[in-house]
Image (cartoon, rainbow, N blue to C red; front, side, top):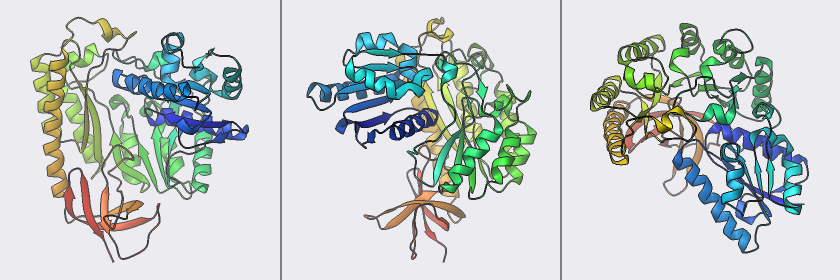
Length: 441
């Protein structure tokens, strides 16, 4: 049996592709090892979205290349977004790589590995639409939660984003297919489903003549065993009253919404090829909070976009302070080859971008501290994720915390729990971005 190990980088959508690949390998007689460096064949499932992600992917490849040079690895296979985006360039620049596999050839991974071990390098690319969106997965998440991809690709064409050129046009999965997968996951013990896509709120618009995310959510809410359903990547213009009503009325819908806004300046958003302005986005946030009481709002914003003036940045800073988002990430603009923003006029220096990023994150840190302090004394349901034997406390997440990106709740308990249990915890204190508490008797 050929030993295969994988390093998967980037977003949950890429992670799902990795899980489909891993299942295919197991079904075809490969032996999986946890550490890619201990394998005969090392697969790097890359992210190629922004500069930092590309650098991380290349660093992983080079680290494995050293092990190959020492004779510990026989072949290095590169898959994922970076492989799809750069293809021949990867083989030219990284001769240690034995195969570059575009997303449209993921279904051919078995034959590609054998070919690469016999004769390299191999370049395997195909139509982006051939990327499998359905099939058995070998979950790499904890057993109590899973990501569920509801569509692939994007048609929004934001001027800074390379995703449409990497992943192709927007295409939804049939609803019955998604619900069936949710049922399979639930039977495996999954209690939290995190819905992901490039544009979650557009789900169904291409195959059902209108966006029907609310209908999908209602179907998923009746799947036995699933307790929480969480929405990530909600495009602001796709959020309507029907969706908010479902979120407010359905107990299984986590009162949490991730809405990447990017900016609030009308001029900057227009150059980004996005809609909205400070007034309309403020009104939308207020409307969401009124429609779904207690909802946790998460967003991401971008500073340093070409042409962003001091006035634009001041507006963004004012907006962040006024909206008091529960969760916020701030990224500095990264010029990406092949996008309209790459060679736009009025590019800002790295120093200006980093300064503005630091200002926004310092503002948000103060907001977060205030929000965490306000939660002391509150009682909430926590999904148990593990036990810290050194501190002698359990830890987990509430509905307000998405896996991997948000904080944790550490709590004491006189009971025995296993991962995936739900417990009631009263918050007593805070520590950085995390909460401390004790389980109710």
